[in-house]
Image (tube, rainbow, N blue to C red; front, side):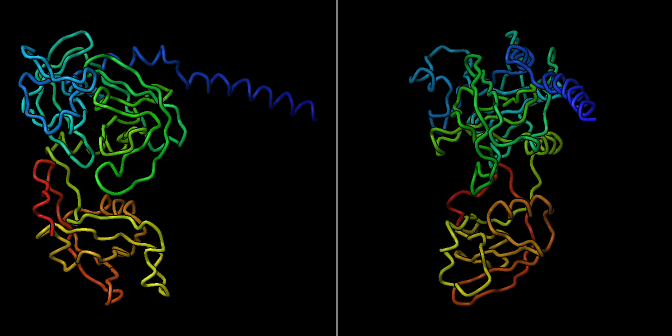
Length: 351
């Protein structure tokens, strides 16, 4: 009987190993598959950039683009599955109003900016008269795991591949708070480029955050990218429920010492408010702790983002907060519709 079990296990292993090996692909197989849909995004104009740090040319050569150039390199992008639309980094396009997409074969296509979202650092372009693109295989980033090996592709000035490992999937606060972190720095040379797993599936898009840790890279997960891109293609903006606050995680439970004795274990701090935003209209104040929205307990900004993802603008929700000197309070708030990247309030509109 034992011999039969051993033979059965050996046969099972024999059948499983090839399936696993075929699921993986060598880099030599992945590169040509991805390369044909990785594009350079450039502008025939010379946009007034907010900061040279985002310029691919300046990144590589530490000098301004020489005069006489016929176009201005902006970013890497990749053609989505429909063969028409390109995903790229919103920040890298800053200051430009006209765009061109250059294929691996060197063909130049005019492109139209359909929409963008600054919090995700995502922009979607539509290629005019697109030909020769097959589109990438957009994978399910929700199946990715910490430590997964990844490849980051770039082609703003030259084609390049970076090897990396997935270091963090936890969400935080502020712009880039919902992005992954990888253990290889991302930079203007790869910003907007596809991030690919060992099966050759695109599981994210590289972003460049000069304000983040210099030794880490930033990646927008494919699950967020896919959902957001569909909305940008359809309506030019994301329809997202919005509070109009600057949220902040608590550094630790010790920050709640002044209300110790309660059952409060965490919350989202209202660090600032947008003037005339939904939260300000509902009576929230700077320094309030948001403890729950409807029946969902909020322990950190991730929980707040999850709640807003599941609700639409216009819905009235109950908010449980803690306010210094007054204790726990209940308020009602009507969720707003988050403005587009171009219309987001600036610092002058904070309280």
